[in-house]
Length: 486
Picture: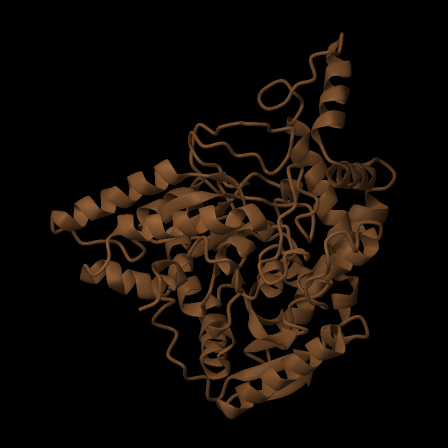
């Protein structure tokens, strides 16, 4: 039998519920794995062994009493360090938050715990989720488990790397412009961005509030469905949480996609996408056809404007959201200043990294009087056009299939001096956030030994549909069976 840390969530759940393994044994196995490899990968900002063992013991005691266990009882989870965790430091990988410990849990944190997950630790990210490589972390750089000289993607690079290195069975991240799907692609795991409004954002430290969404990382589509099931609940604490009941996502994985209409938007196969990635996606499309789906070309003509729209709307919202970090209420404060304004300026200058400052300045400029109509208002209008493109596609197709990232994981530092090249890493994922749709990334091949990601996009609140399509492809193609060797 495989080591416990090598198993998927569904496999561990069967062992735990049958009594063949205890939650404590599973937690010990993953903590031991983290101790063995995280010095190389550096996925975790904070490891929480005491919390994990305490939570595992709660479920072992419940089983000893004969209580029914929740579906994810004892399954180790890594949370991105922008999820509030009561009494556990939450840094957003920024110096400005320091060792801040929230007085409450994010709703997603609470729901994962109630579903049985045990918290292994909090993972590294690009500072305040602003980046595509985790190199913008204010703390340290996380490395890709497939090649330690390469980035894991971002901004949720720590969670993706933790799952890929099997230091956590499940991960959770936030996706503002691709920050779950892109690192999932680069790390060879499954990453799901639910529909905006499907998962509560209460207690997620805000970056761009009209774009942020919480979602799962996992090694298989089935595991992803299990964690999404825990997260997908209406929350009155989040005014954008939509009161729509979630279906049984795991039951939707029936393997039958006969008659599924798969659209292939031509804009996602432009010159900037590596030829081997295009080839891998086209090979995947042939698998869909073999499984009984129909495949046809379509167009989302305004997708080309997605990057420009994103880099007006997201920085504008960041400028507003990050105004709260002033050195007064919590986090870092520069104590050398002699007046309040000087303290604000010195605190923000020392506390924020360069990428965060850059985006705050961009957003503040776009919102200034005289520029609002020229930039922000126009971006909102184009956002509507992007959404309408998708709506037209849904008249003829059930899902859309594209590459997740235009390239595989690049070497650490390769794009440090080229911010435009870095931003282009999210060109395939950003339109989904702009439109508010759901999408999933899963492995579909390799280029030079590095994973390639396939993106399946679905209409709003059709997570069950994309999960069914992804699971059918995953089981037929078998790429999930290949894992990073550390």
